[in-house]
Amino acid sequence: MKKPYFISDYVSIWKNTLSLNGETLFNCSQETSFKDFSKSLYKHIDMNYPKFYKMDNLSKLALLATEALFKNKNFNPEEENIALTLSNKSGSLDTDLKHQDSIADETNFFPSPAVFVYTLANICLGEISIKYKLQTENAFFVSESFQPDFITVYAEQLLQTGKAKKVLCGWVEYTDDNYEAFIYLVDEEGTLEHRSETLKKLYLE
Amino acid sequence: MENLKHELKTKIIEALNLEDIAIEDISDDDPLFGDGLGLDSIDALELIVLMDKDYGIKLTDPKEGKTIFQSINTMAAYITEHRSK
Image (cartoon, rainbow over all chains, first blue to last red; front, side, top):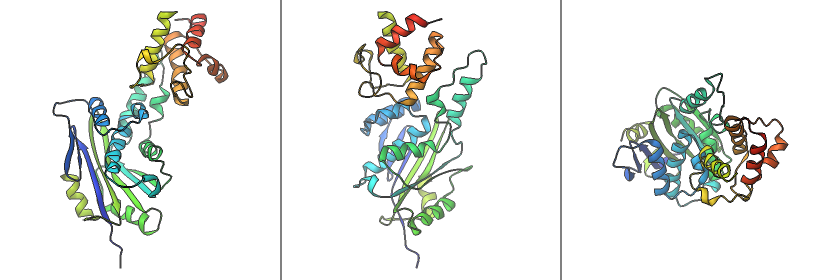
């Protein structure tokens, strides 16, 4: 019989709001840019990780959601063999465009190394791995929309084959100051069944 | 020279996104790497770009950077002597 898995916790970030397991944890009441919102949220969740400020927007978004989720868990992520499986629609386009801007003028050609290193979508997985000292399986997928059917199968494959003990999955999308993160932890314990239908419902919450 | 040191601190904070650090927090002889400001290898590349973009100084030998980027004092002295902008 197939072993059941659960969604132990889930975090959403969009429209200046962060919610954990369906409850709003932080909200910027006034309209604000992602730059200001992310800075306020970083302080609110008491992150204390100065490297955060050097990251691109996609990595900031992924890391804030992960931090909020891990802070709610009574474990040391480093010891839990947590695989990472994130996905989005636009890859690293936000940073790619910044890099392109810096090399567009042949007479004023100064690409920034600090921007260039973020011109791959899976760098945000690297940032999460560095922050929590994870040396685990990771994959980043690009698709038109969130694909719970595919991600569910992929995550359970990692768990069933013993490649991971838990899997942090989700959707992190950032383009043109529009952002959306939905991150959840798949585990052997929890109350929400790890099923595609459950994820579709939580994602739309 | 004092104006240049102040300008350098401002530019470094901005270019390297040192959000938690103010100009007053950087002493002229503080090490920029290691125990000082804690800059990393990508920051070193950003400083090389900054030297080229703002002062017209092209650093081609990475060993040179180690001496030049020791502190605000060493950067300011090198820029004063070699700047073309």
